[in-house]
Image (tube, rainbow, N blue to C red; front, side, top):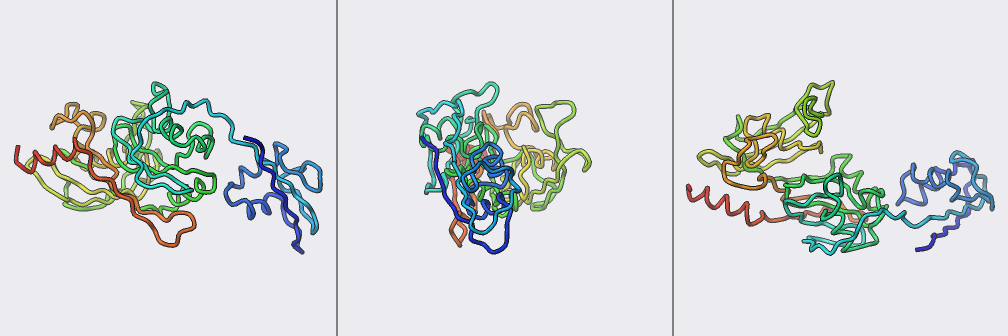
Length: 308
């Protein structure tokens, strides 16, 4: 892929900063990305390399922006089947299976969702960062369900803003051991790194963690288990798993924050991202996407309903 050249003429009466002017024109890029292009010599003003991001543009100035192709990530595209729930020119909505890691990390260099997406659409490489192309949010390895991936920089920035501003409505289904103190409620408990187990998170004090808020309601009650619907209002790592444990009803199969041995013989935890409601770029009405419970989780509920 070759560089993309863009040419502009500044015709405003009032002088303006170069980076501010380009942010208004190149809405697919963040201000920091544009400032990086200027600092790296990819922006010319009146035929000469821009001196700095804060350079003032006068009426009649010409601006040329050279946008280099995404840098190679070193990630390997793999032919792994994907359950694509929705796709357009801006994003993918994928129903991730349990057991699939979202992006490569230590111990997981292949077989990840990112490897699969690069095999499905190589153009996503480099979108939103070299190490996690297209990734806007995450799901734990053993959590199944819906996850969004951006296909271009503009969509990546838009989706990030939707999550940051808490405009995305997320619905999870969780089967827990026991039952919560009340059939429905709201959990506000700060989450931070576990001081004793650095690879884990924990409920901590306000000074040591970040605000984490979840709302829940009971969908079904069984003899020793409860099916809950969770709506996380924040997006902290392991939030629902920790909040369930905090309520005294850990998620079935969660050997980290719950019982070491699954009470129902599951080889994964019973947590599924079932629904996402979000406004997409250039669309006025929000869309709702859904993913049915995987067969192994449906089978567990069927047994509980039969009283087995």
